[in-house]
Length: 261
Ligand code: NAP
Image (cartoon, rainbow, N blue to C red; front, side, top):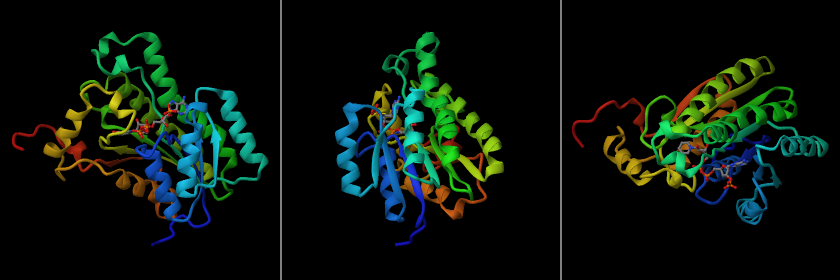
C-alpha cells in the first residue's frame, strides 16, 4: 500500500462510532501512515472512541465539544504544550434538532436554526482558528464534510441544508484567509451514507433508495471513497487544491430529473 501521509499528523474530529465518516477517514489516514489524533464530544462517547482508537492504532484521543470555546482552547493549548505540529485537520461534525429534520422548514425555530449553524458551520471557523497556529511551517490542510442539500432542496434536510450552505461559504472565506500561510481549506460533499446523524433525517432510507436509482453510478456512496478523497486532500497530491467543494457521491449532484430507473 502507498504511504501518502507518511510523516504527517492529522487531527480528526467527529468519530462517534464505527459507522461515522470520520472513522472511515481515520482508518484511511492510518493506512497511509499518518499519526492520527481523534476527539470526542463528551464523556458519553469517551470509552467508545478510545476503544475504536485502540483498534485502529490512533495515537491519541482528546475531548472537544466544538460549541465550547474553552474546550477548543484547551485542545489547542494541550497539543501545543506537547509539541504537536499538525499537517491536517478533518472536521466531520454536524447537529440539528431531530424535529427540524422532519417538519416543514418554514417551522424551524430561531433556536433550532442557531443551534444547527453553531455546531455545523461556525465550528469549522472556530476549529480553523484554533488549529492554524499549530500547522507546520510549510502549511497544511483543513477538510470538512458537506452535503448536496446546501445548494438543492432535499426534502427533510431543511435547517441542515442552510447550515451546509454557510459551511461551504465558510470554506471559501477560510481558504482565502489561510491561503497565504499555505493552509488549504476544502469540503467533500459526500453522498448519503447510513450513519447515526443521517438516521435523524426523516425518511433517510428513501434518500438511499433514490441514490441507487438516480445516481449515474446506480449505487450509494461508500464511506471508503469519501475517506480516500480526504487522504488526497491532506496529502501532497492535493497541494494545489483549496476553496473547493469536491463531490464524492456516485455522481448524484449532476442529476436534475430522472425519467427512467
Ligand atoms: P456521525 O457519525 O453521527 O458524526 C457526527 C459527529 O458530530 C459525531 O461524532 C458527533 O458526536 C459530532 N458532534 C455533534 N455535535 C458536536 C459537538 N458539539 N462537538 C463535537 N462533536 C460534535 O455522522 P456522519 O454522517 O459521519 O457525520 C459526519 C459529517 O458528515 C457531518 O458533517 C455530516 O453532515 C456529514 N455528511 C454526512 C452524510 C451522510 O449521509 N451520513 C453525507 C454528507 C455529509 P456525538 O455523537 O458525540 O454527538
